[in-house]
Length: 165
Image (cartoon, rainbow, N blue to C red; front, side, top):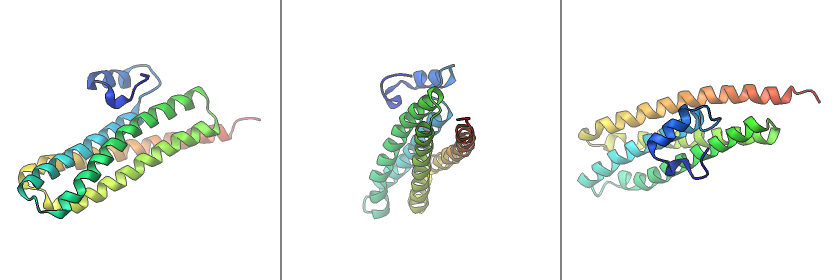
């Protein structure tokens, strides 16, 4: 696991780390990165649409929120990778809780992105439909990853609770 932010890595390096035998980053960090890409795709659609409709307040309001959400998702990749690595090293209640909290933060970001997409969808230019579709598909992929990760985390938390004392 690198000492710097996953967001600062070259894409190829990130992909190599996820596919390696290292504990982290894994699916949670990949999901968070995917969420950042979803936010980037809809931000692209909003930016281009805004060029053609500069007075569209819906688009103007959404763009800074999308950029902030994108950055938070990238931070979420780091949080998930660190929390998961810590949990694997020490399956304590605190580390299990930190891992769950990292997942919950991504859940909140997914919900926020979903709302923004709903708000701006009718304002997106037709020539940006591909970016809109990509954002929705990437968001759906993140939801699938989160459901699987949360089920795995619940199982790990139960294992912590069932330790003999």
